[in-house]
Length: 402
Image (tube, rainbow, N blue to C red; front, side, top):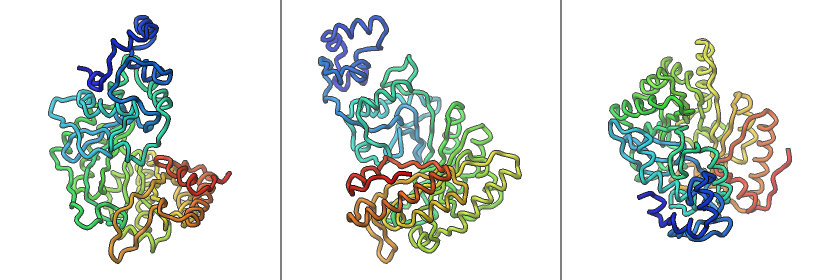
């Protein structure tokens, strides 16, 4: 039974109630009633499909369950980082079969109808958009032969290589009292994941990072070298805070994209908040990686910064923007802080949503000045989930013109 029927969709009843749609399906103008209803019918007030729940007006702008796949520590496949568990993958089992499993198809149906589960509802990475806008944006991304519930072309993969980290940032779940120690992906799983990735040479990005620090894994370099030799386009999110040997620097210099997790240019405060990290070490590693790529005659990795915005980082954002420009960073991504309990005796931080009106307006003014610096030097700025717009609306602070 098709998933759309599992959710209460009645194809024949919809076509009976809408003979013009039945004619369009017969002529090949639209694939079936389900397609028509999600693309047009619900916005036209059509009836007859009988879904268990009426589609919502909004949904998340997320194409992950169509184009993305993420490997868990045990090698299962899940749609995105929000999900804790995935679909088991056995030997001889192709990614397409797994990506059409109920977990993925149910998520696609929920996004199409706006009937979001708890994972999507709490996601702060993808923005909320009108459902019609989402469906209109999705449809061109699927081949003509694909049903809206079928997986699309696999474009990105991500590997949760490890959940351990060399740092203990005050705002991280790993620092919370009683937090699990985490684990590394074991070598047999690394080998199996590597084979699956190399079987899909058309992917645009293989993100070798999980909830921990990838380069903290004892076998991260060997895993990445195998993928690089097979032609996989690797990217990584890393704190870049370790002392790397020459072989590790060489491997990193072969990455397509290196996103550095760093929140500010204030070295002393950064050390207190991120704990165990040295700003000088991060910048030195960036220089060493670029130098090695040049020495070996390779294209330089694209460097970007991943910056958490909270009370103590946003007021220092102009200095941070100047650092990004000085280090020839191509992209800066800002993300919203998810608050965990304060740590005794630590340099704790507050999310922007917890700031009072005056504090928030001051922070947004600092953000705008930093944005002007980044824009002037053509650094691309990305805001995860568009959360800054919501803060502006709350504070009554309009965006500055640049």
